[in-house]
Length: 212
Image 1 (cartoon, rainbow, N blue to C red):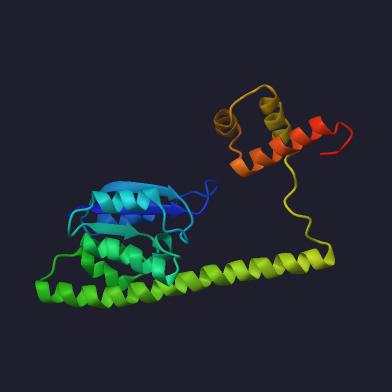
Image 2 (cartoon, rainbow, N blue to C red):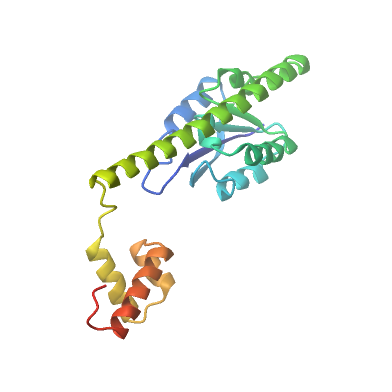
């Protein structure tokens, strides 16, 4: 049996390894050793997460997928959660989450009857917490949207300020003939922003007197 830790953050600006200490301590208290750690920067609302599926592929039957919280594993819609559960169940992977005490028993040796009982209870609780995580995700997005709408109505919200220095550097690199891959690697910008600046530059060249 191998323990594989999954650590996720939604963006590259967040520290996905923040929970490593808690996961290491949990494993050590039970005499377990974490065989591998899989670090991901993707939203839990996305099913397409390369590191998570690499973890699943690496697992043998009976291995443990260890997470800090169920929402690190899933903020998925119900259909996507079912797809993920099917993948995990097909490999006979045991999910152990620090915020789900009923799952802790899956990390300890037990007889077949006890193991099946704990597995059944844990499966139900996983589904409940996954549904709660999804609702929390949707509620937060709704509140953010409502807050932005109110701010726009009152003139408070002006959008994210433009990073003029970065955008000027991107424009200069485009003007020098650098490839998009080189620019993205150097500046960390998105392809969407790069396309926008490229369009602005073409407009400037076509209409020199027009403001970008």
